[in-house]
Length: 104
Image (cartoon, rainbow, N blue to C red; front, side, top):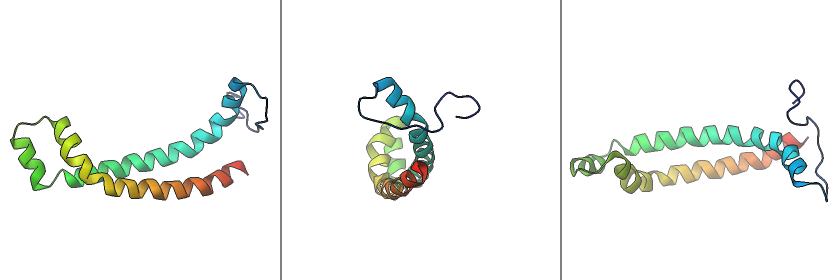
């Protein structure tokens, strides 16, 4: 923000501010919070899917001739959703605290 000056380093969003300026003002803090959470969620989703893919019912679905995408969509993802939801909830708690840190 300081070196390239693509986004303002310090900005205030006020009522009546044009939409373009408002988006530019919140883009840097929003991306700082989102990228960390997104990386963690992607890593945990991959781990949960890989763990489920080692199950016997996945092998049965593959032997029935289903495509890899269909096996993941119909069999693996519904069974891996519980750990993914847990990670999402933990990340929401991080975001609540992270918003305070980023705003300060």
